[in-house]
Length: 427
Ligand code: AMP
Image 1 (spheres, rainbow, N blue to C red):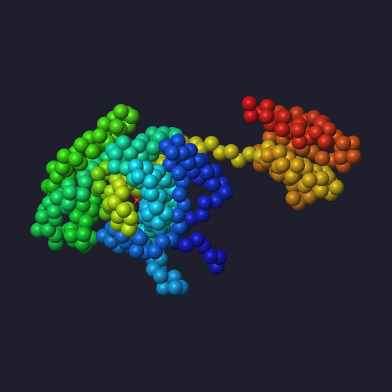
Image 2 (tube, rainbow, N blue to C red):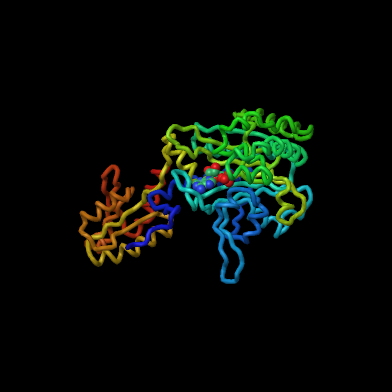
């Protein structure tokens, strides 16, 4: 039996790759516009990094990691998310070495989580994200939200909703945590197994539980807003006011907590409202993670970032019927009439490529008719037809495939003639 791709993975085939290039290009250009620099970190890291950097109590670490021992008995994990690796690299290479410096980074690439599969959820998936490290100013929180919204707009997505909340600073979050434990502890037994574990480890996540979301204790749970200290309140007000200045629509959602342990202050999430998008409506989100750099062994440096699912963004484009411009045509197809001209076609092809003309030729010594068919299939703008007589006379035929007009040009000028015509086409 033929071997198939591993469960939870899929191939991105050539017919679909243009969509990915298009998406990657918009991400790259937008990040550059905001002066974020690309960073590429390894696909696997030591397991310890994710335990510390993502948090032991999270679903990701407790259930979903691809962890194994390598041949040297080191515990290795395929990265389930991007932030921990980026922060590890930031600390390892001391990218913070200058004071009062903000380090703005972005990444794209595959992530791995052992999850139950469904539409929009696979075990290898792709994320892009940004991290802004070194600055605790609410304008940075607002900037990353603006950056993500700009990407959605550039893609043409309309049905997106931004939900935002604050978890406050460390002090506020700790007070809130105590209040939640006090609230949920007496009814602990009525909650699901995961929540019973979460109550002590990370009670904020109880609010996020899909199983217990209809339990009456959820309604009556204490609200974060009542536990924010003045600094946290002011910080959040500033973030919202920046978003207001930019006319970015958002909804306040007091139950938004995000899955990872390390968030504080701003948290936000972006959902697709497009009809038919399916149950997995989250496109991504992020927030502030002051404390994470210290957690992975660096100095006390604040950070804020987001991560979005690239597979999901492509699904959102599909759900909103947005056509992606695909540039898959070729400029020239060389049709050759005999074996002698076949060899010349090979030479001419490289001469055209030396001048950045995208071209193809026949590789099978096929009949002329079949070669023209191939030229049509490849959407060639021009064909060059080389016959033996023409070759001897130093003349060659050029055919515009759209207008079907055929003309003769001098053999030694053919490259220039093609370039001239392609320039007219591009104007
Ligand atoms: P998270 O780091 O869990 O907040 O994930 C951020 C985004 O990555 C999600 O909103 C999804 O768009 C995407 N994502 C996370 N897990 C998966 C998965 N298993 N399959 C596809 N996309 C995913």
